[in-house]
Amino acid sequence: MPITPRDYSLIGRDTKLAEENGLASAEWYSCPITRKQLKELMKRSDGQAIRDTTIWFIALGLSAAGGYLFWGRWFCVPFFGIYGVLYGSASDSRWHECGHGTAFKTRWLNDLVYHIACFMILHEPVIWRWSHSRHHTDTIIVGRDPEITSPRPPDVVGMVLNLFALKSGAKAFGKLLLHSIGELNAEEKTFVPEIEQHKVYMVARLYVTIFVAVVLWCIASRSILPAMFIGLPTFYGAWLKMILGLTQHAGLDEDVLDHRLNSRTVYLNPILRFMYWNMNYHVEHHMFPMVPYHALPKLHEAVKDDCPEPYNGLLAAYLEIVPALIKQVKDPQYFVKRKLPSRAIPTPDLPNGTVPVMR
Amino acid sequence: MTTPGADANNAGWIVACHIDEIEREDVIRFDHAGQTFAIYRASEDIYYATDGLCTHEQVHLANGLVIGHIIECPKHNGRFDYRTGQAKGAPACVDLCVYPVRVDAGKVLINIDYESADEA
Image 1 (tube, rainbow over the protein chains, first blue to last red):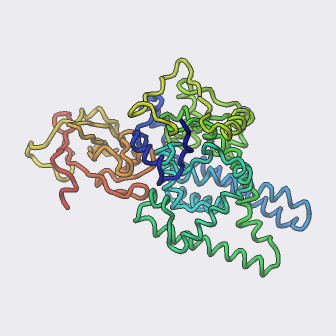
Image 2: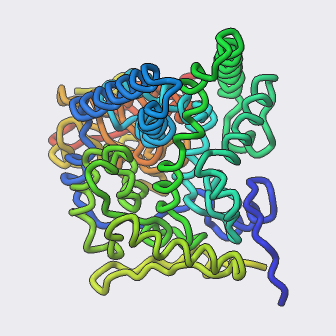
């Protein structure tokens, strides 16, 4: 029987299939944890996020100052290298955590950092709040999840280009222009409610205005220096975001209702964990998204016996991811099947029986 | 310890739980006749009841976090004032129905025949 490629759009054949198969807005497996424990882990505080955000802003300021002082000499390169990663990669976990409303206890601090980080990474804040909400409802459910970065077969060239946000950035600018003229595409209309759509247009116009101002500033000063601080770091600093981000789900199963099978937890060193705000505990984050980033290591300890073995570092994760993606280019049905430990609770049966993965 | 809307009549009142089943500033789930509710105990020891599912994505609010008079949905951070059911911002855009609650002989009773939406 010939295999039909999967339709990853949110308005196509697989959207209907996901709904028919009971995979849309379904109930997901959760590792057993007591209410008391979970309440303790979900508790909010401002302290750690204020400390981490202060360090982040100071590091951004110092690296920007170095880049400015040494502009025109080779010595500015390491400063812009650091600035770019802090701007174009560290912002990925900041928008994410603050979007969940868990990083800070104080609501307006979450909102403030959310909007700053969204701008840095070229995520429109209203669109991404809603798309990420869907990503958590229907994680890696084909036809439902708007944030599948590694479809089958994977777009390997696109992934390489996205080390410098070349494909994702171009797409983001295209959408920004569309939104700035008061339009959403058909897929976005499926997850952004009508009452929120005017906010998308307003923010898009603000972003466009800022970028136009930066371009005019560059022209007036006959230098790309202004863009090295605002705009370009989203691209030249994106590589770490891509490297860390791919570990979350790439190469793993689709259309399962158990985050232990479609997400990865990877142990990282303290510097990378600071950059990524503990998003490397990705199984735990998806299972209990209201647990703040600073409590994820404790959550991991509480549920790890019910989860597959974590990966010991980026190298271990990529030793699995790279061959899996290469195999998926030729065989889109291939995926890495995560092995649950014998002591773990088995994955519950899917609703309506087994899902036909491709037909 | 009776919320607005409660009356002395017994029609529609059902026992949801014992008062000690909920800690202060917490919530539990209560299912009855195919409906699911969330029963709250505020830090000032007043009990409240709302529909049990978030209006955004049908997630059980009883697994969420109570902060003051706010219940946060465990899945997407939808926030509601559980005293009034008012949605406090995206992704929660539709208010929750709230139900009158009274405490009688150590038991928490809710009136399921009365929904805040009926007032409209």
